[in-house]
Length: 350
Image (tube, rainbow, N blue to C red; front, top):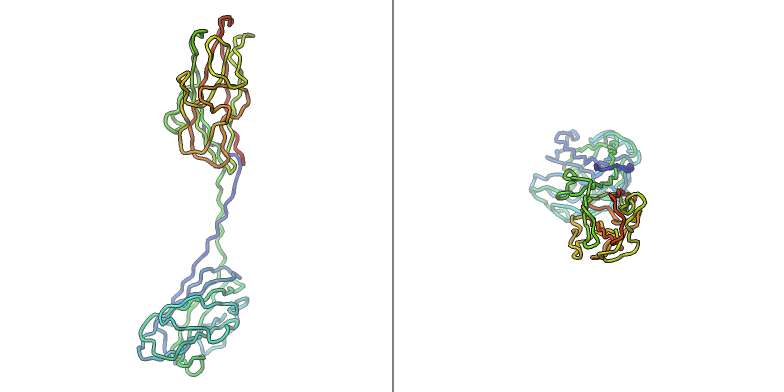
């Protein structure tokens, strides 16, 4: 049987866009340009909170003394000599100085304002190297659009006095992309006289011929089934049918577990590799399905129509079970062609 879709589950994946923009030519007239600078944010969603901002730039003058760095965020321009228009919703006041690379001696000079932060260090020459400064706890702008950062370096430790170097960066706030997909629950059951391997495509046959019945021997047969599901609470497999009969003549079904005995009227099944009689196989496969208790005793057989014979309490991979059938008859069993049909039903437990 093919895998059967029972219901629909949905999975929503939000793709977070990482924005990294490098600008190499924007600066104020008359300022020394930072040769390389960057800004990376780990969420570009409008209004996102606790966002991480990674600020980077290079210092190329080995003799230049740097005591502080000021970063200002504006809605209108990256140029330091122009008015800085506030960004709606943007907030640095709860920002934390998470990490740094390069000199590794920067710290907050004072608490960040809504749109700017000053990082201070001992006023010494840094040399030629790349500097990375990471802030966390930033609140993104409320609206989609393009915004600007202004990076300035100073000899002073409080970002006062002439600017040594400056440069602009830009970043975009966009709508996240929502992707919906469906992972349907499936219930997988196939039944055959023989199912080779763990492949339902190899299921063969639906008829068992037990031959002539005799009070001096036990007649036996087997069939197999494979079951699997991704349903969160697993599955149950039930068997329905009646004991073999020929008109009004019936071979008794074993309503309680019994051993196989010659000369008695008995019909029963189990799902084990038995020794008396020598019939059946143990379950195989990586799945977690197990045999219901009454049908899992070695050399003991039972049959009650509607019983659950295999179950799992969780999603499970494919597992194959072998059903062993035994028939015994007494010497006074009426003659006839005895037959029975058995229906295996699997129910997913969603």
